[in-house]
Structures are given as C-alpha cells and as structure tokens.
Amino acid sequence: QVVASLAMSSTELRFAVGGSGEGHWTALRDLHVKRTRPDGDTSSYNLKAGERLGGGMTGPFFGDGPFSDRKNGRWKFETERECITITWTGRGWTGMEVVSLDAERRRREAEERQRQERQRQEDLENRAQGISIEFIVIYLDRLLQRQFPSEYSDQTTFLELSSLIWGPAGNRFATPVDFLGHATMTNPADGLPGVSLRDAIALRFPGHVRKATIFVSWSWRYKVRDFIATVREHCVHNPTP
Image (tube, rainbow, N blue to C red; front, side, top):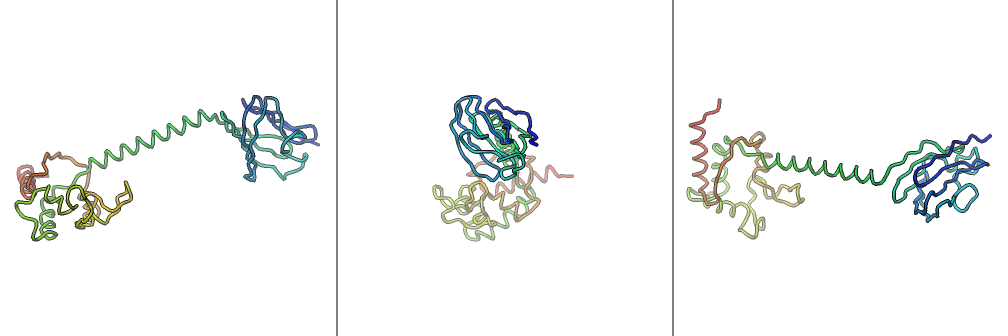
C-alpha cells in the first residue's frame, strides 16, 4: 500500500505523489529551475506554468514505486526566487524547507557588513597600539647604536633613520636592513615581507606593545636621541606608581 504525503508547495513549485506512488513536481509559474538529486547529480529545466515533471510525465522520476529507495533522500530545487529542499522517502515528500533568495542575500549582506565592522574594529585597535616608554628609554637607543654603529649619532633624524631601516624614499624595502626582523617578517595584510617596527617589537619584546595611553606629537625631522631624551624626562616628572 502506498503511503502518500499531502501535496507540499512553495510559491514556485508544487510537490505531490502520483497514484502509483511516484513523486512529481509542478511549476506554478514560468520559471527556470536547477534540480540537484541526493547523489549530487544536477539538471536544469525551463518550465511553463502548470508543467509537471515526474510521475509518468516528461522528465525524471523521483521514485519508481512505493518501496523504491534508489533516489530517496534530500533533493534541492533552485529558482530565481527560492531555494527549496525536500526529502523523497519513496512513499512521499516530507520536510520541505524554503529559503527566499532575497532573504538569503540580505542575510549574507548582513554577515558581510558584520565581518567588515569586526575588521574595522580590529584595525582601529591595532592602530591604537603603541610601544612602551620603557622600551624607548631603555632599549631603543642601544639597539640602534648596535645596528648602525657608524651611521647612527646624536644628529640622526627620524627621516634619516627611516632611510637606514627601510631604504631610500620611493624605493622602500628594496635594500632594507633587517632591524629586529622587520624586513623578513610576513605582513598579514598583503602576504609580502616587511612589517612595521611596532609589529617586530611585539614579537621580539613581548609585553612592550599594548594599547597606547599617551599621544606623542613628533616630526620626521626630530632627532631620534632628542626624542628619547624627552620621553625619559617625561618619566622623571611623571613617575608611574
């Protein structure tokens, strides 16, 4: 005995069981539909309103009889408006789920906006990170002197230092000096070698890069050692607990 489910419909397709137990589907309007079988095989059809496939009509059967399980399983039908999934048990249709593609598109757009907002917040947090005063006062001058014993002096400006570290303006990272490993580390933003000194310091000196709490106004033409001396003077007059 055939145990047939009641007909099930979306706004695009109607699913029903024929008298001999086979499943069929009927287009409710003129449409193009892509059908994916449980085994992954796909076919596409251009249908007129009222045209039926399966159940002895033109097109594929969804079951050869009430006890056939050769094509049983979850089927998917995609139209311009909907994505329909429904199970053929060999005895009837069941478990129909319909997703509006407009709704799905809006959901994906909302997820993309959320992803972009998370990325924006991460970028803001990353930009807000700074180097500790302790590193500047205790380590920076010593490391620069060791890396550039003949070039680095009391008169070296940040502009001159940038040329020493990254190469001449207009040709950055062409012949960089690998100061603290910054030239060989991979930049996650573009996958290429070369990161900021802050990122290199974060790896080499854990704990010395955190969210900045002090903003320092400076210029490329400031002398590096004058800058370090100023930060040290700030520490003298503003000791931390």
